[in-house]
Image (cartoon, rainbow, N blue to C red):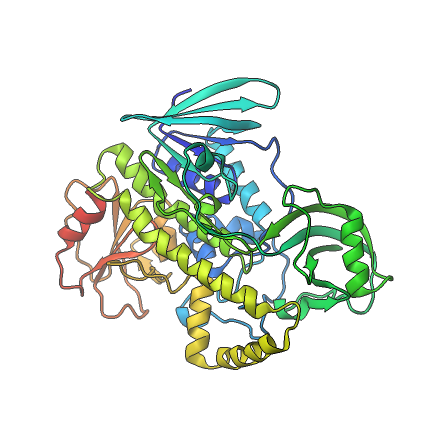
Length: 487
């Protein structure tokens, strides 16, 4: 089989990357070793910046349409009792959005199916070889079949235990896990008064007792998500299946014998290992999502990182394949995204300590002080921007585009709706049309007006991933910015 890009892994990162490539007309094939998509909720919500990124492609609205009406709860840092509010960042999503990872994956895979993009399930990659022109991935199916796919590039989106990373001998330096825990989706036949049955802030659901720490919260009608582990940190190996008896033991220990599980819908193990590849690019192979970085799953950071890895890389790969990418554009993927994940690894490690499920008295004093700090406006803004991804700035690049209310010759629109094509955007707010040379196929120019604050800018050049590449207040020529990012 021949294609342009081979994407290994059909999680949110791989599916989002495939979506980005198809927008640019790039042929792509997705391989996935699992025969069926996991039904487990996994990440229970999307961080505000992830929701904004999905908005840029028109993907948020159908996902949000299925959400039950109700008030959203603010984000959290280390489970502390302070709701993080991102409203100061001028976002339409001041709080995390309760879209589970499984819903995002199903939506993206459905869109790819409509576009005829193959998601080859039940194919495990067995060999990866690259030469000067392309990459070849060999695969084997569970029924004994085998084959090979050849593409100009390959992107490993195959998770923390990445087969591609292992086959290429790419190191994954970091720290081993120090604890083992379980994430489970379950129903309850009965429950004690200790079980909170109504939605609320994350901090309200943490409990510890009889040697276990747990977080049990409702995620749907009669459905709960439970995170639990032993206070000692001990637990079975990552590959060991989670039994119903194991889950019931934790329920009884923390919530009492009157709390009885009905059905164990899905369960998996996780730990607090921290690792990151040193280079996100190895020749014609790139790493994204958990294949590039792992950390303790807290606050939806994994999905946040993976989706933005995909949106950062997708348009750059398309530029290289279509022949217009300027020198260094592909390498900017590593330069921009590696530091972002490194920061997430640092703050998730800090959160793991501060959460203190064992309730060590010394660490509890740290929790009290950090809680007080989070209530100070400047500290609150710093942490909410960090957790949500809304404060992200790449070196030499402006902040994210605010989703402005605009008026064009076709009527009122939101700025995000002008980026559905996955191309760059030259937004002229002063009525002047500016020359873009031969880049009209990759930079769309729109004349619009707005009453919102744009810091005096009369024109904005926006990269396909939603970050400002230039404004007419920069003091640099537009053509230089166009050449830097669009060839």
